[in-house]
Each structure stands twice: as structure tokens, then as C-alpha cells.
Length: 151
Image 1 (cartoon, rainbow, N blue to C red):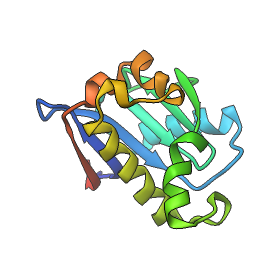
Image 2: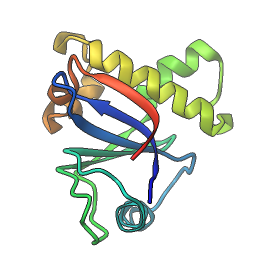
Image 3: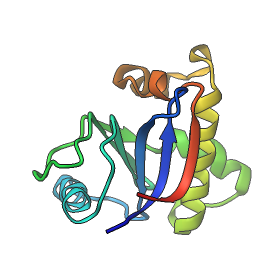
């Protein structure tokens, strides 16, 4: 069975490092988030990657050391307020996060990840310290992004 991944990021050595699932749902419960990840891992063929990011309009959920064989509904290692990430991109487009389409959300996330891959550590602001703490910044620096790929 093949699965369409919303986004995938590769490190500077061209190794798959991050898989991203983008959903338009807001105010998701911790149970819903953990269950969605569990279902993706059980019923879809997701590659084994060091990081898995579930991106919603209001929150990012990041799991480290994603194991594609895990079946339990585990809580994320990081829960991040998405507003500081989306705000500059939404301001440029004039789109309100409550009215954003799934495709626009995915495009904004793609832009942010592309910017992140090419940022220097001193260009990260205070709201982005989770990227350093989690190791995601170092894992992606100098890498590349792919979208809508088949696993």
C-alpha cells in the first residue's frame, strides 16, 4: 500500500528526516492527535523517520524518533503554538487562519519549512527555540523539501 505524504524533508545528506501531515482541524484534543498519528502509523505505510510533525492551523505536534511500526497512541514530544509560525505568511497574503483552505495551509507550511532549511541559527526568533531543543533545526539545516510524495 502506498501513502501520499503531505510533506517530507531530507537532511543535507539526502536522508529522509521529517514527515509532515497537514490537517485543517482546529482545537484538536490530545486524544484525537495521538489517535490520528496511531492510525497513520498502523494503516498507512509511513517511512521510519527521526521526526513526525502533525501541523494544524493552531498547533504543531512533533514526535521525535518516529518509529513507523509503533502502534500505541503516544503523546507528542512537543506541542507548539502555530500562530507565530503562520502569522508572517498570513499577513503577506491577507488570509485569516480561520478561513484558510487545506491547500493554502499546506503551501504556507511549505514556505515556512523551506525558509527554515535555509535559516542560520541566529535568525531564529524566541518562538522557534523548540526547533533547536528538539534537534529538528540541525536535522534539516541545508536539506531539501519534497511535497505530495508517495511513500
